[in-house]
Image 1 (cartoon, one colour):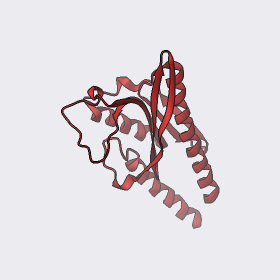
Image 2 (tube, one colour):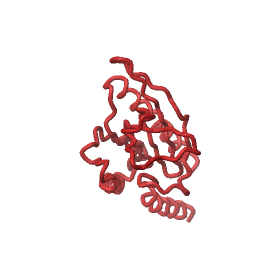
Image 3 (cartoon, helix red, strand yellow):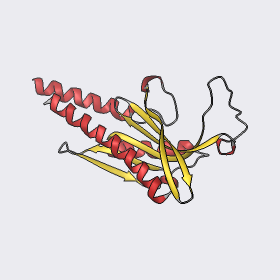
Length: 186
């Protein structure tokens, strides 16, 4: 039972990662923009999986108050208890050599070397990954180029405001999972 469950969960997570990347690409290519979008992979009581998407989460996202968005996400996580989450967004990014120092007096959106990208940030109970696509605009056409191929993020050593949003949720779920395993052994 446990092995089958783990395989089904892992398969659902891999499908979720692919679907989130495809959603970001499709929105960018067809709509020409990507509003902040949040997706949750939720395991239902019958052990089937469902995906909930909150499109255009700009009402909850304030770039000057990111904690407000994190609080909103944490409330949603407590209610939905997802096994994975994804945040998709269009953003400006500056890529520089490690030896170059960032001037914090200049906003990224004002940097002369900025690039327009979409970011697909995915977190599961055991790992995190970030996909970055360069946006190439040519008139009305939008092309995307995967810039960084599937960066695995070390969740244990990551301290960003958007990092480890599932930790509290998974600490509780892990306790429940272990309790159910111990009950089934008796």
